[in-house]
Image 1 (cartoon, rainbow over the protein chains, first blue to last red):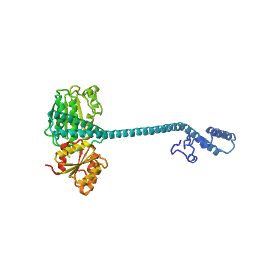
Image 2: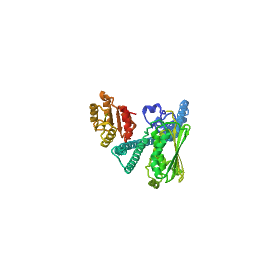
Image 3: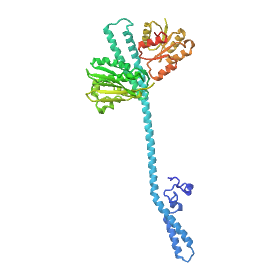
Image 4: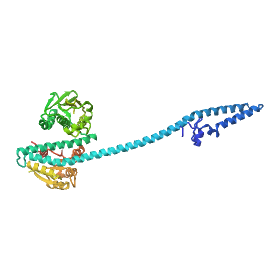
Length: 351
Length: 123
């Protein structure tokens, strides 16, 4: 053990690590004198006694020197006694600290390894998802392509019933494609790789395109969808495809969780620096304690209800990522049994 | 009648593109791997090439680069079709010299529109 800067010349030269310190250096008194303190004291006192008994000798100077030496070593002894506990304490503290540092380093290393493993697993999952979606899209391309060719009656006429069936296959195929793209987006949003292609577009048109994609199911359930757009909304600068994707996700949720003969209202408003779009339904609603959970991936609040209404539980988490990647915010107002309102904003940019 | 070369290894995708282009009055040449496609492009000098990305022998990007490096095929417009939708893939396609990148599954109408546009037949 070494106490920095406290070692005297003697200690530095000999390299002995002192256990006790005198008040002048880190070396303990006994070591400095080469023998135990009490021996010094006994020696000095005996010397003094001898000198006092032989009174006639002129030894006053030696007397005083010896007395000073005695006081100094006594002070050194006291100091060494006082500092002893501190030194021992320091020593123990240092040992404890070293041990702790070693443990922290070990744990940090372990955490780092776990982190690396996690990153690796996440990368493997992302790669897998990407490859998987490619593999899924290849047959889907053939299915949707052939349906289009048949629908366009390029290979001959088809009857009304056949046309209707083709329409169903096509709609289901498009739905499948939508799910595949959502999976791809989920892995992109996990890797913070969601891409935006911003350009000027007409919000009105995007809203009606999104509405069309859920109209079929809505009409089957007798759900009425009404759109109110603030006429003051200018053409906005954002990603039209992503905006449509947000709307389609929110609308399909609204349709999914609204029972027959319900109502869905889309409201677009100009709010100065933002354009806000709200989608209000008369569906089953969400209780306040679940407001946060609905935006988390794979979470479905009520297993019984998700059995009834279906869904993968990734739609809203993608919506949230997309809204935030576009610089906007999403909020939710709802009460069980009284419907839900999802509102998101798109910042107005100058392009 | 204008010649369009389709380089595509997925049989069904090839068939669909072929059907729709023939329907619109084009003469279609086909190749099912990159090398064969590149040779056909150099030999037949089609008016336009529709090119898949994942191909045996040479991949789509390589075919694209080769065609843009070869004087006789340099001016031929290339429309790339792929299931890959990552921005990096799209960027690689355009850097290799593609004139248009369309992701699969593609909309037949959109494909025909792009073909006409790059052939200068846009109405």
